[in-house]
Length: 203
Length: 170
Image 1 (cartoon, rainbow over the protein chains, first blue to last red):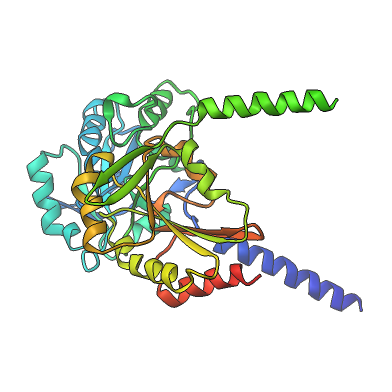
Image 2 (cartoon, rainbow over the protein chains, first blue to last red; image 1 turned 90 degrees about the vertical axis):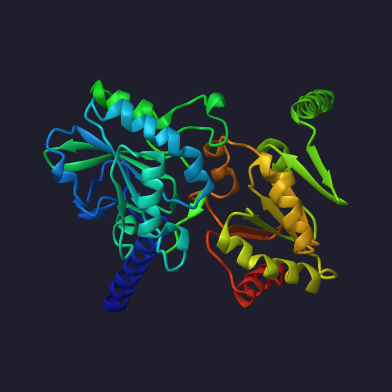
C-alpha cells in the first residue's frame, strides 16, 4: 500500500513538473544568463556577443523587415544604438523569421533594408531559427536588455521599447531607455518586463 | 443599510458612465467599424449570457491571421442559430482603417462583427485579456459564462470548431 502511495506521489510530481516545463512562453526570465551566438550579419561576417570586449551589456532586439510594428520602431531602434553604443550598450538586432514562411524576411532583403535605412548596428540572421526559442522571443519587435556579469550576460529587461508603437511623440514611458539608464547607474531596473502587440515569429 | 448600498451603486454607475468613452465609428461603402480603447472595449470579453463568444485578435498585415479568418467566418455562419458569436478584433493602425481594413472587409465579403482596438499602450491591457498572452497575433479568446480558453496560435477549421464546441457543449 505504501509503495502505491509513493508511486502515486512520484507520478504526481512528475506530471506537475511536466506541465511546468511545457508552459507556453518558456524562455528567459529576468535574472537568467542569456546564451551567446554566432550569427551572420548583413555584411556576411558572423557576430557574437563576445566580440564586444568593451561592452557593458547589450540591447538585443528581435526584429524583422516585414512587420509593421517592427517598421514603426526602426528609427527608434537606430536612436537607441546611437545613444547607448558609446555608453557601452550597443544594439544587436536579430531577424528570427524563416524566409521560407515569410519571404520579405530573407537575408538579401535584410541587407537591402539595412543599407536603405543605414543601420549602425549588426542586423543578424537567425538561420535555422535556433536562437530566438532559447531567448523565448514570440514576436517582433521583442527586446532583451542584457548586462555583462562574471557569470555571463544576464537578462535585465524583457519586452517593449516604449508604451506607444504608433506615435513616438505620445510616448510616456521609455522602457528600454529606463532599463539601460538604471544599469548605467548601477541601479535596479524600474520595470523589468512589459508586453506589446507584435507580429508572431514565423518559424 | 440598503440606502447606502443604493447610493454606492449610483455613484459607481455615474463614474462608470463618465469613464466610458464614446467609440469612434469609421464608415465607408456600407461598412461600419467601431473603434475602442481597451476600457471601452473590455465589455466584449465579459458578456454574461447563453452565447459562446469567439474573440479573435488579428490585423490585415498579419499573414497567419488573414489565413485563418475564413474559418472564423465559417464558424459564425454555421453556428449562427446555436448561440455562438464571432467577434473579430482588428489591431490595425488607425490610419490604415480606411485604406486597408475596410477595403479588405469589402473584398473578402466579411459578415462577422469587426471592431478596432486602438490602444497603443498594450502593456496595460494585454494581460487583462489573458495572463498567458505574450502579445503576438493571431490570438483567440473563447468564452461563455461556464468557462474560457485562450490560444496564442493559428487554427485549422477543425481545431477551431473543436475548441469552440468543447466549451459551448459544457
